[in-house]
Image (cartoon, rainbow, N blue to C red; front, side, top):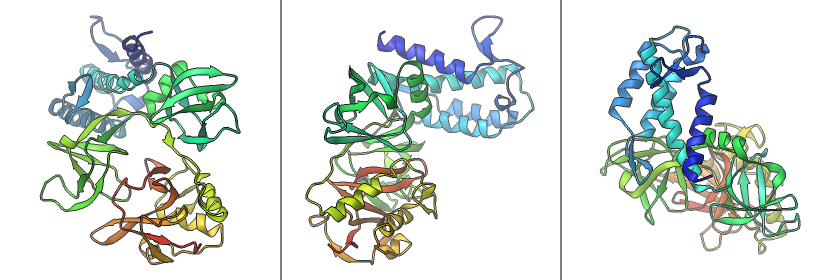
Length: 390
């Protein structure tokens, strides 16, 4: 099956799942939502008018098959607002047909992600799945895949898949991977609009203006979820920052899936530090909850590191701003696994993470991403502290 045919098949598959009540109109040319559809699909005309206004203002632009500009972010946001305004009142058939068309355009844009995978596999786990160098539980760990991470399956060997995902190529247990229509369904549900930086360092600003305050810098190592696309600017989700904007000319915006994270256990750390890091990694994929301290039910950034360290008898204050004064200061050259890395703006700390080696950190990132691994340079660090003492 060619990738184009696969993409079309995916659009048909997902459309049928989302709009089980949609059928051909009498003319056979336009879709319509059946009057017997679930009330969840029938919304107020006021909410619908907002959607259609945004749709007219933000039609999808495509360049080399990719969605660019203020297109799908606007449509996606409009649909979110539309479905949030659910009402039992019905709307006219013409409105319903337009809703179906808008949704179909978003589905088609999401389906482009399937072009990246010849044989798509989606990982389904509670927290994470190890990627190994060899098809054995004794194989060296070279990466980790969170729930719903995508991969291209290259080969099958005795209960293992040989896969490629992001920058990682290795073996994963086939027991935790779905394929076929189920993989396509999950991929389409989880595909999100993200921005990939195409320059070495990019300023993140407080507002959509070159004159706005610089909050931090980000690098090419990460993808950032897109919240809104404006004229020349992209609003992104970035850790604990409430608002964060980057210049659109320095990012590539498109739908993408979560992929494997390159990871290798650090051998030069002491056993105690290795144990701290390994314990923290057990909670990958668990939720971010503001004000939370539970490693399973949800924690924010400072609650996460506080609870991890407390398990080993190491006490730090509750909030990141106070944690930044705990222990002793170190620098990026002397940083060891288990040390804390701090982020913020205007000299004020507002985020904390735990260093795990090889330039990576584990932290409670955001509500949309939960607890995960990123480059320590996902944002510019403000400081580093050794609170373990070794």
